[in-house]
Length: 251
Image 1 (cartoon, rainbow, N blue to C red):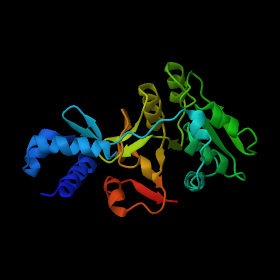
Image 2 (cartoon, one colour):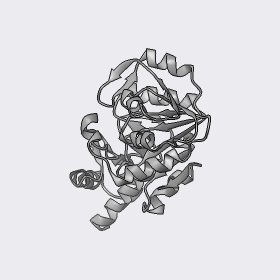
Image 3 (cartoon, rainbow, N blue to C red):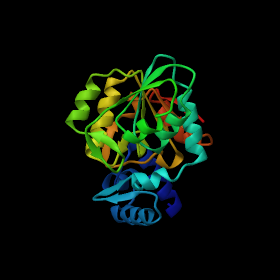
């Protein structure tokens, strides 16, 4: 079997199962474990996967701090934000997660209908200072500065009192087998709690976050109402998410 064929099989396993166990891959492909391990080392050097003891995991996206992320705004995120904001209806309560993608939603929210925005992000709340029709509920707690969101028991208790119609979730990675994930344990717990309190949860995903995995799991893909993704992503990458009942909205 050619090296390129082996690596293609390994990537297929990684997308399908969310991990590669070297011993099992060697058995499935009828190859030596040393060959698989060598391929994994080369693929890790090429940035295709992340080596772990005994195998490999999907790549973890880079996590620059919030101020650095905020200075980088893209046309893609703006389009995703506008498409997400179009889902908001009069009288609803919308929960906005922290992050640069959800900031684009805040900027695109309709200005001619009344609704309520709940958020545990002081920067999102500040973005809505001059919005003419949005009531804003700001959740407090311990500030996780990397993402500029409140976490901890105080934030949990306040979120418990709310029943949002829509939660726009921010995630650093999404994978059909490993679910949605982020880089901090406490932040993942808060996101999971908001989703459990909300009627529907949507996530905005750019191409580099798709089929990736970060250390802390938020929730399974099947718990999402929908994913708002950029146009042009190959259907073969989106099919595993559709198969789990997720509505894929392109923008």
